[in-house]
Image 1: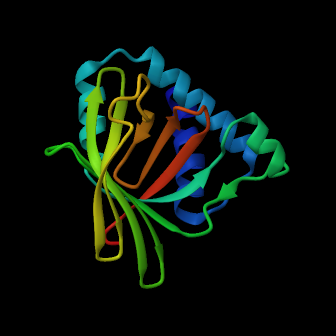
Image 2: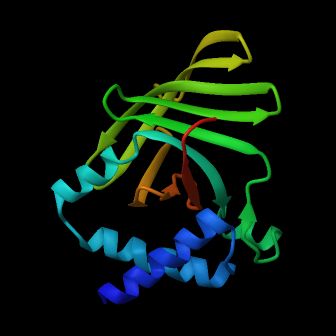
Length: 175
C-alpha cells in the first residue's frame, strides 16, 4: 500500500510541477490519498503537515465539482492566471492574490487550523494594488470557507474545498 501511495504522490507532484497528467489518473490518485489521509489518525503528523503550509503557493489546478468537470470535457483545468495563496501558521494569516502583470487583487484575513487537517478562514481586507479597504467576508458565516488538506509536502499542496472540488498548488518563493 505504501508504494501505491508514493506512486499517487508522484502523479500529483508531476501535475503540480510539470503540468502533466490525465484527469482520470489524477482523480484516482487524489481519491486514494484522500482515503489514506482520513484513515490516518495521527494528530502530531496532521499538525506537522499543516505547519508546512507556511509560505506562498501558486494555484496550478482546480477541478470544481462534478458539474464543473463536465464543462471542461473531462480535462484538468490548469489555472490560467497567476493566483497565489500565502499562509502563515504562526500568525494565522491568509492571503489570496490574483496577479495580472503589474496589477494585483488581494484578499487577506484570518485562518484557523482545526483538527483533521481542516483550515477555515475569512477575509477582512481587500486590496487592488495600493488601494485597500477593510471588509468582513465570511467571518460570521455558519459555514466558513475552508480547505480539507489531503497532502502538503515541501513542493506541493493538495486540498478539497468546501464546494467539493480539489485544488493543487506548488510552492513558490515569491509572487
